[in-house]
Length: 137
Image 1 (cartoon, helix red, strand yellow):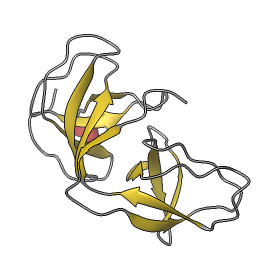
Image 2 (cartoon, rainbow, N blue to C red):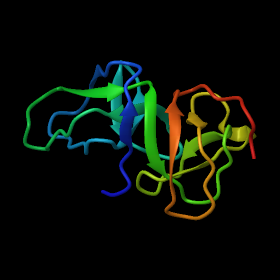
Image 3 (cartoon, helix red, strand yellow):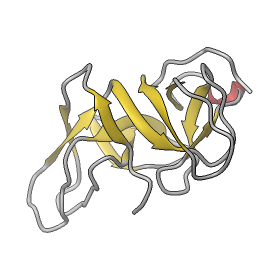
Image 4 (cartoon, rainbow, N blue to C red):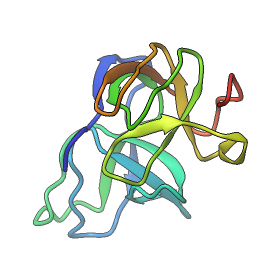
């Protein structure tokens, strides 16, 4: 996968989430929250679980994966984002976009700390899953 988020400032320690045995996750990938403290592959329609702390290959038998639920990260946008806007997953890889009113609550990734102008730009954001009622587009 591409466009994984990169940790810039660690403000929270990663916590273990359950995952299906044999599931692979790339370091820096977004994950979607499921029931019973479980995460799955990211989905634009899902609730944000966080960002994977370290890679988990499919052949590892671990039943858990470490996930960040907070921090300052560098991410990649799919379109223009303005500083202070709530951001959400696009469902296309690990790219992010400005949120809308429908994205309020658990679908928000966090808050943009920098503005971007075009698809593929990188920017800093604060990871705050489910929070972010700031300036919406």
